[in-house]
Image 1: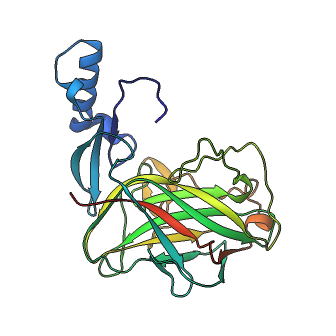
Image 2 (image 1 turned 90 degrees about the vertical axis):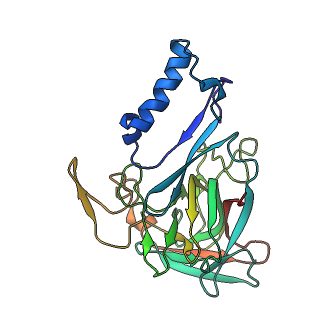
Length: 292
């Protein structure tokens, strides 16, 4: 997004953070790029689409697709509102005031869509707007965009550093909520991290939370959900272990947020409250890609 060169391409793939550096697919892409720029080979790289997506489907199925820009110009940015009355996630704004309180040491709040009538693709950056208060002077917000099959079982994916990840994850410490208005975009809040803004216990603040970009096609009959948490995401099931690490993997790999020095329990181990009011309804902004 900010690289200075005009000669730049974006390739997006699944699996771990290192596997496609060494796969036949990944090696072929790299050899064509370096062959063109370092060896002057006329191998067609100058006609390569500027964006090369491996669009993900459940079951670790990928469909290769070329695009011209990022985010995609045809993106239908869609707000899905969190409904406190029934825990649903939909395009209609809830009415009235409400609040939902959750233990930060538990699984938080889940807001789930209705079963999809037809398959739906989300490809691009994601952002959420929340109105949150804490019992203390700070709060850590963990967001997980999750997918569930027709039987209600969570669908996980091979992530960059964990074999069972959700669609996308986002984090924000409430005291770091200050935004750079010149760099922020509706789908990508830009936090300055140059000033601490402590909370007043019980007083809600507005949070713009960045969630990692993704590319996923969700089949008809499946549901997607936004999980608002006070601790790391954990897959619906037991942990796994990997040969190269003694750590137990629950869904975020070895990069957990459990250090009591960074997250003292007297501050981050209490309760948070999500607030709903007219003109202040929490939502997640998703990059819906219409079917061609």
